[in-house]
Length: 469
Image 1 (cartoon, rainbow, N blue to C red):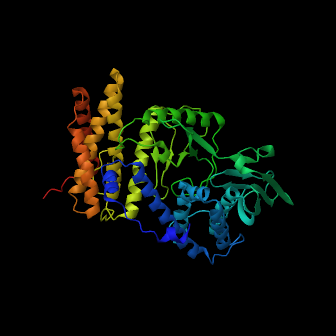
Image 2: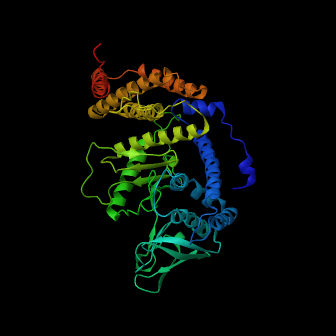
Image 3: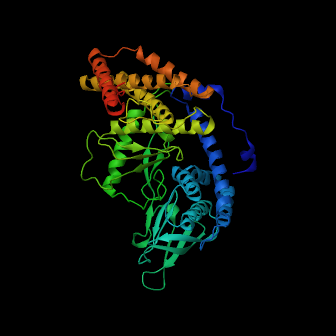
């Protein structure tokens, strides 16, 4: 967070843009996007602090919380950078800017602004600094970004003001009791150990080891942060232990599916790109998830984060990860370049939707499903059994056809900027090459039939016949 970093210009090298325009992106390209997201978040934070500086609050003023966070960053820059770049932090910043402009709702504004104090406390614990901040408590709960959540026993229900202090990695939180007086808890969050009575819930993570071995890489399995959703403030939804273990099992298998050596390209992702997975809609293993229903989402505000309803198979999870990371890369590009002029009219056919889409949505879909087509292309290349070959060939043939149709719509829309046309042309070159690759005849026929049926059904649903003259 130094001034030198603030002033460093961001100029994307042509070769990195070309990699991303083709639908892929090397580690260097993704690192550049992350640098850009960091700069964007600092700008958003400066704007937000300007709006909140005069906000009446019973908590520690945001300027003081920001000072604590900056002091911690000077002492321990790496963990504080991770806090700044966490998907939920980006979600909080953008949600707060929507709040101050009146386009979002939530708890009292002063309480949501107090989340900056929670970020500052997490930073202080990592840096080992000493601080004392007044913080918002909801039913005695205080989520600490990147660490977990503290729960005060017998705390007052609803929203209240508490006091949190840090010193040498130790955290103490005091708040009003349920009947009278106050309650207090002390713990050491960095040890990830439970405080007495289970009052400390540590952050859940998923671990995996890359193809080359070495130290395990961890991905946040976020079930506590109030800003883990795409916009709205959410209460914690703690996974039970069996559900968390099922996520770990599926994730480990999905990583092995994705661990295909070769030049980075569409559909090939390094799971280390994932910053957080938000399990949505279920906290227990029972009942089992439906075998064919996949629900996921991501937000341009939360780079590297994805909200997923746990799928029934590791293959489905691997495909979903590819899909959502494509959205993250494109969202970051849209923060850097004006790719299109979108009037937001929902008039375009998207081959994977039943409703008309605006141009930005169509671009996102084309980019995401180009990655998905690459994913199935890799599965087809590695398949050696009848059912696996048939499934991979069908989805590769279908997704490449659908994506190319969407790219053609983009290129003929007349609404792409110079950079947008370069991106769409890059996708077209990738897909045109794939369309020339052989696929088993039966799978190709099924894919073409499915694509034609989808378009016919879409037209019946959305295109009004001309009125008789």
